[in-house]
Length: 190
Image (tube, rainbow, N blue to C red; front, side, top):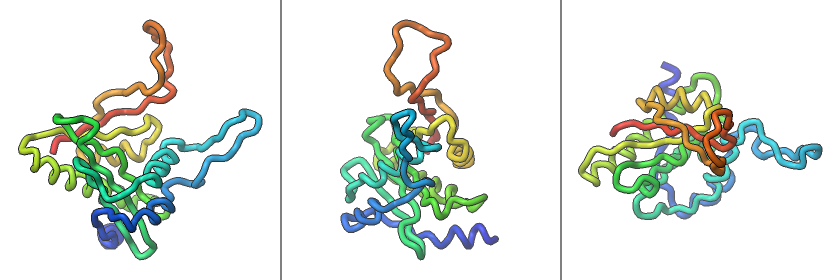
């Protein structure tokens, strides 16, 4: 009962030009920035995929372009969640959810805000699909170590569709190749 009441405090709407400031200040990871590791001469974040998502949200410039929707959720404390659905990545045969991000302040225990986030993403995808007049897949990408997002995708009806290697290809087949920049592709029908 408390989960439903807590979840119902989010108000969703399309992103507007005047939301750019809220998007630039959005925080969906902790710590909210990478730290410099002098001995390794590089920056480090324990959940780099969250930091990457945060950077993508902060770089968004609404309003949305043709073939995409950006939806924002607000609560009493400001911007709470961001959903971006686009047909640009998969062309005519599918839609992609490049970003589904929840504010760090809402990410605790089993709050189910993540489920509301995915419900909104799938609702938007279904609206976009109805304009195409055909059944399409909805694709999402998730870092292999991001277990919370994988569980959220499973609850939303997604299934794993394979691993996508984003690092440069090695020369020849290597059974011991460890993908540095891999993401898992997940798919659901709408």
